Length: 414
Image (cartoon, rainbow, N blue to C red; front, side, top):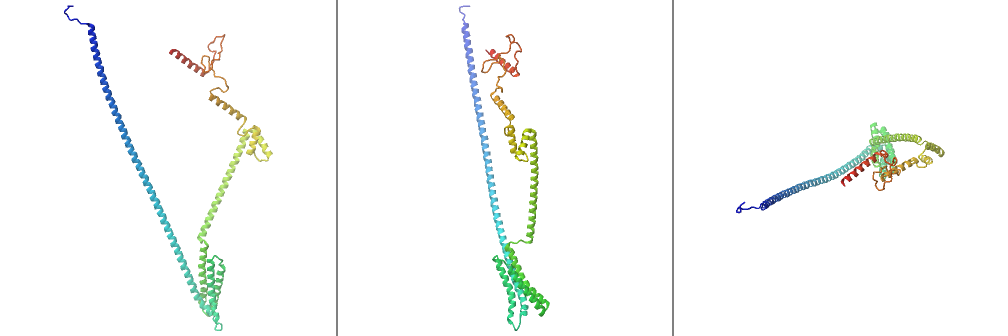
């Protein structure tokens, strides 16, 4: 190499190249980092925007649900209010209908009572008028019958008969009004009426024609009779007497009630008979079951019942006989007590995870114990263990296999 030729240091060139490469790598790394940070910021901003959008969407949905819930509740409240208003209107309308019906019923009752009073008043006036007309018709014949120039005072006799009947009938009316006996007043009035009718008939036939005699006699009876009929109706109304139709309906209802009562009694008797038969059959089956299952107790119970004077084995006799033979009440026995004790011992052993007889579980010598050291020595032949010396249960074999695998795995890890 000539002295004037430029000289290059390879190490410097390599270092410069390494510096340029490192600078380019740093620039690329910074660029990539900046791009990554920018991309990350974009992604973060997009995620935040998406989160905000989702949050806004959730808020919108929540607002819509709240609005819908409010509308639904408002509609339900309006429906309840309308229903309450309708019920109130129905109640008010029903009350108004009841008041109107009650008023109409009272008006109808008052009208009926007024009609009845008017009819009774009219009937009373017509009966009184008819009685007066009959007295006017019958009185002249009686006056003619009693008239005598030698005894003019006898003309008062017809007035006495007709007036006496009227007075006695008024006495009967007073007795009816004061709730006193009235039959004798009415009897006297009818006697006076028949006397007057007999006088009219006798004198009419002798002094006049038969038509006059019969007509005046009928008038003497018809007047008091019609008035007494009026008083008879008033008495029945006062006493609450039933009409023929009402009495017939009452008898029919009584017969129906009696028939229903007889049918009910018959049904009860049949049910009682069936119940008695069922009870007797149940007692028979119970006696057969007791005699079959507990022959000694049953035989003793029969002897005990005969000794106590019982016709059959009652529950008291059976309990006493069972206690005499078994020593306990019927729901207990020595076998039952032993069975219960055994079951309770098994349950206690299962809860404590131990055998019922108190022995330890079968476990091979190579299976590590839980708390106590190994004390079991397997059988050997001439001091050396051989294959088949120890007999394992299936559960012990599975447990030994699992334990061996776990021990080998721990050794491999170490």
